Length: 449
View 1 (spheres, rainbow, N blue to C red):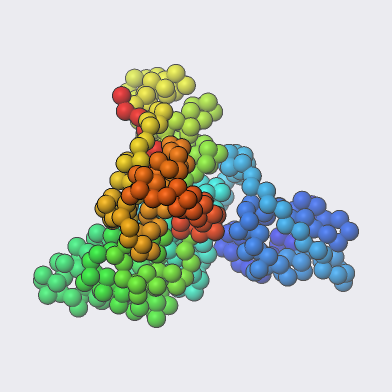
View 2: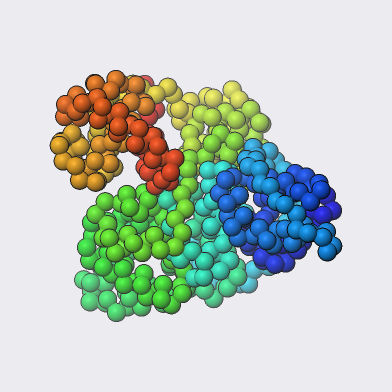
């Protein structure tokens, strides 16, 4: 539609390339009739964000001549990811970006293949991807820090590496430090032992972009948290970008100093959920293309449905398929894939006991099972207890009285209250939702032979 194409050109000019790609490009015009424009958005978050930040500009771009601004109606329309991916594959390849030469030293240990171009976007990671693009476009200006959290193997590391690569594309002289919390701790210990703390502070406080993976491992380390606190403050005051990843929402990280927890929440906190089936199919096909494999559609569907939602496991399955096909000189078809991946595919979930749920929750919250079952009502223990009760009810369907007995002889009404509280809370609190999902996946383990 010509009016929409014109509006897109106006929006691109006004918001810039990065913001256009992140927030405007996913929008679709459904209709424009009698001064009323229906615009399809991929999620509720997109609707709220665009309405809050770009509504007037959107209306102006769709205005006809000197007429009034059109009424904008947003409709949530989460498209199927495999359809989006197929459309993207059909497009003409984008011209290669001209990159200024950069040395390996300046690139550091960023993973070369983890770029925005190779990241498959779906409903489960749409928000985090958009936030990462925005940060990469204006490091130190938008969302500082950016805190991305989610369970293992679903794209956090890929996104933060993509930020690093994009920053270097825009400024080849940018100084980037990308490391894990464990490396930060080890560097600190070495510097203390060798009396080189001045060098340590200079190395981390003079960068343009600090990316710290697995920030939850800073917890419980008093000296490390103190040093990172001062490093954080120095970078933030200098308007240098900080990007953090974790498997937990900041307030769910136990033994993390309150002042550091507070700073982690200063900017934008974005979660990544486990990819749904459509996104997994797209990921399988993307990884296969990167590996130089052509997978039939039924094989791609089989891998997506059977291997799991961990992207690293999907990569491993693709690598194994390619290696076995090459070694045995066979064509990859469904029967071949079933045979090669027979030990890697998921099987039925084994029955889970309340004791196993209690163990998993206690480990996650760094508590003992006896503490969860005790009469103590501190906020940290009470939350862990309520989540464990909720999981016992949802996963294995245990009766309320039986759950109460397993948690120190509590009345069934207490259990009902706990389950209702968690059930309602996961719809309002993304941190709680992620914690419950992580624990749910931990106890729904694959069966063993």
